[in-house]
Length: 278
Image 1 (cartoon, one colour):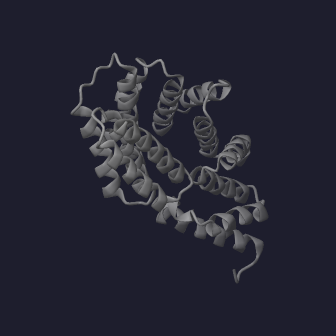
Image 2 (cartoon, rainbow, N blue to C red):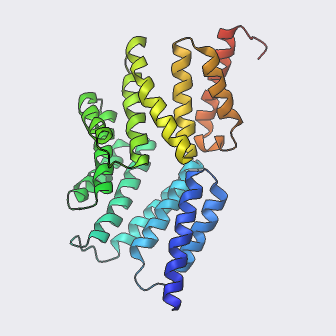
Image 3 (tube, rainbow, N blue to C red):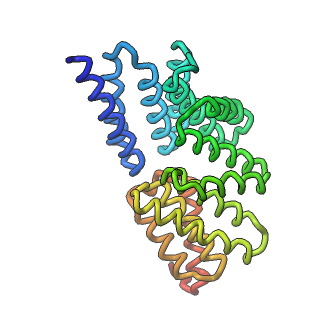
């Protein structure tokens, strides 16, 4: 009975921590994740769950721009995983290992260290071939598309993203990211006319992220939309989006550099509108 209590508490606190993290309520997220870790320590077989808790905590610290703490918890997850018996005939082991490798790879990608990123992302995509989990397979497609995108193989990236968007079973969060990345591909093009092709992808990503209340996704997509509206001289729309970002309580999740950029962009918009005082 006590084991069942700890199992239930671990799952509940982990879910709460994950959901509060999605909404950029990081203090609450970490509070629940620490509770999840406490309860998981009372379970005999908790390797996968503990690794997932560490990964989720690492992602929260990453969003708080606390790089050292993020790295610490990511590698705690890896250490926990590698100390266990990795039997890849077990689908649960595949899923847990995939999550750890995938998120460590994504972490290094945000640090612009593609050499380290590829070590773990390639391990993750290899594991996906052993999985019967469609969500995991879709996520691996997203990872492959992102690798091609970062390496400027845009045609290959488009194929992966388009495949995800045409599949009705793709999850909402994966669909948001596929739309966002499709938009980013068009935004990399040199001419404004081609850049406008990003609008439907950004608007769909924005709609879905607002619908699910995924704060970080919403803020990130808002900033892309604001920049696009400014480039097409729709300055009032750009102004409104930038003001909304800078007034949002979750804005700090964007990081100091991104926030500075949004202030700079808003200044440029006011200049274009002739509002020099602002």
